[in-house]
Image 1 (cartoon, rainbow, N blue to C red):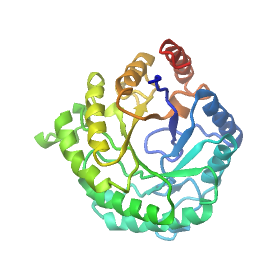
Image 2 (cartoon, rainbow, N blue to C red):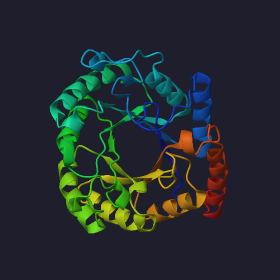
Image 3 (tube, rainbow, N blue to C red):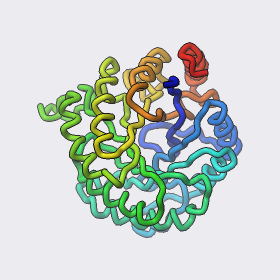
Length: 312
């Protein structure tokens, strides 16, 4: 089997913790050209809105929650740029960053059900719209995530036949613990699979692709977690992707581009277990156009590494 390069990326325009690069249409057109050069055939807008900030106008959100003005319809821009280059675009739904964290999962669903209908009516005729992304990320079944995702995925199935992607995270590093409670200790691959067997069973027939975030396990053990996940997912008809993080969680600042040797290891680790590798997030951390000089260097080292593996 040929060595897999990164062939997809999230677009992180409405972010929790990544600063904006303040790009306009010209810079985004250049970036989409770079995607083609880099072998990126899939882009995923991580969310069309977070809290009060929106990537496109949405009455479905703004009629229910306070929002800031929208100056550019980034969803339309990205769809047009993707269509011109035959890139698949996955549209992420809305994350209130509030209601579901307060166990008000029904309000989170209600807003997003309206969002789905609105987005499909507005953008459904774009040839680039080829999938959906469910942006409510968790490590297990907490915060009613299974109810949220299955309800939204079922509605997405009703309005279109486009595939649905999720990208949860492992609970495999001590620094991912949220408290001193022993129940929050890192989970072994066996514990992880026991939890996700139940979730995958609920997702069967609704979720097509699952791309776990690789940065939330110890680097040396990532292959173990991806092997276990792929086996469990396949039993329920869900295809395993990998979300290879191109930023570094281990530095004292949040977040620089990762060391190229870490990226090389992460790519090697997932090769036997996944059908596609996407990243969070090319434009900030791996692109030669990034405002981070280290990202430009990482892109050069990444290209050299792919050549050494026979992928270029």
